[in-house]
Image (tube, rainbow, N blue to C red; front, side):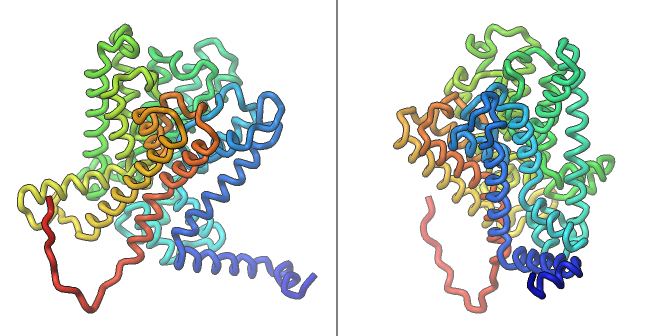
Amino acid sequence: MSAQSGDLAKNPSQGEHRIARFLRRALRNHPARVTVVVFVLLIVFFWSLLSLPIATASGQRAPVMDALFTAVSAVCVTGLTTVSTATFWSVFGQVVITLAMFVGGLGVMTLASLLAFAVSRHLGLTQRLIMRESTSTGALSDAAMIILGVIFTSSAVQLVIFLSLFLSFWSEGVSVGTAAWDAVFMAISAFNNVGFVVTPGGIEQYTSDWGVILPITLGAFIGALGFPVVTELRRFWRTPRRWSVHTKLTLSMFCGLVATSIIATMVLEWTNPDTLGSAPWSEKILGALLSGVSPRSLGISTIAVDDMRPATRLLNDIFMFIGGGSASTAGGVKVTTFAVLVLAVLAEARGNNDIEVFRRRLSYNTVRLAVGVLMLSSILVFGSTFALLLLTDFGLDEVLLEAISAFATVGLSTGITPLLPDPAKLLLSLLMLAGRLGPITLATALALRQRHNLIRMPEARPIIG
């Protein structure tokens, strides 16, 4: 044993300090790279577990691509599957998927900060700055509170969902163990907006069960709001005037999009005999509620996507691409990005020099960041759609929905995912990873690369439109 390793063995705190210094340097110099590395390592870890023979119900090793696709989908909280979660995987495999969903839902920036916090016992200024960018908190002192809030909020909400689902499943006559396990799995899947379903009959068997659908819908709604918003609502729910602009903007746009999605689904599918047309009133309302929240990032629906009208699927494409709140379990370009761009268009149409909302003026850098996220996300989605059209024989409608669902980590599908060739599955896996990491890493990288030039070029105004 070398003298250096001997010193570390005698003084473990020295090794901890070295790890802490390494993490601080990495987070300070390459935060985006740390984010990618952490998520890739998580995927490899859960992929290796799902590749074990005990992970499948048959006792044989799962195909390499199916195990990889499932690991990526679970860690990136997407929900797209190439095999049946309920029948293909064993109890061990389902436990692995559950852990992957829970860890992935915490968010990669939260995981990285938790790791640094556990080693160094405190958050340095750099980590707090990074957390402020990723969680949209206004004060540096709020960063540590947000980290603890992530754990408290996710655990509390998932516990409430579990209790509600457990009572509903148990009342149907299944054993206590089966009801408990199904409730645990579905509670984690719902809150983290994953979309995996462990019940053999799928979610369609509960189309009229308010005790099952309503907790799943509410859990997904809360999870997609974002941890900063939920934490702020928990602290100041009686005093809305103390809410930040981020919370007000997220709530107003998020609720508006959900209401629009619910109403549009009811109007377009009310008379569709393949979806809501033949269902009773209560079932129609319940199905529309779940379908209104599902495109935010949940991916669970009692209405088969391939049976929807083309107009409904197109609206779902739009809603999925927008996604949920920042620093949430949802994907997409985020509702705040969409809100900022809408406000910019309205300001331009009115001839206003400033973009104002809730008696505040949005900075130019905020608008520029929103444009960057939107453009790069659009290029990623349409480039992947083009590649999938070349790799498969499916139509544009089916492929576009699958690509947006993967990028926005939603999980809605027309049913073509298991039928895709391995290159297309690999492309979707990369798209899920890019969609989960893209907005976080892009926003952090751009925010940390802002520079003030001493010399500015003369202004030019090319013709627009």
